[in-house]
Image (cartoon, rainbow, N blue to C red; front, side, top):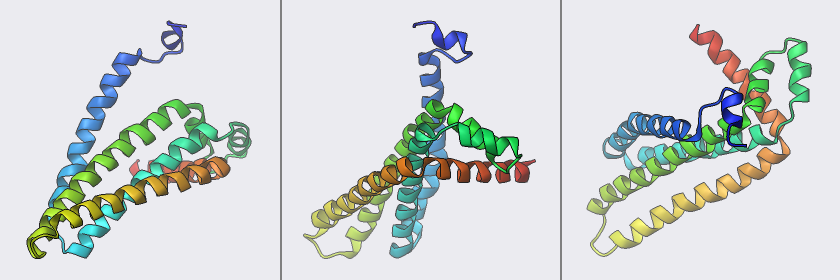
Length: 185
């Protein structure tokens, strides 16, 4: 139904896409610059740690997006009726699973993937200076392959876990969001 989004109060696709693209651009700028700078300033092991943290963030948000789409509303209604911490936030995540999944998987996931690629390139560039001539290509390929393998493998494991523990993941995220809102206000 072409007009279904308007009746439910949602923005048309092109506006939502434009807004999401702009939000992604700004978030990538905000995260990318410090990550890129860290690659050149931190020692090699710490820079690799930054890459791994970015990878784990991407995996977690991918899990959250899958869990939001797979979770059930009923347990969150029960928790909300008992006024359990994070139940309303969890219910919001489940009811807005399409937006949560788009943000988590597309925005955060794509930003993490892009930033990781740039961070690995910067790390390899830095390491190439200290490595004997001839090993640059091997190191570059190995670093990219390692990060790609960790990302894809981690997301595959995470998606399986998210499907079987969707309500728990959404509930934990709801509690975190509730805590965050109390701290912010």
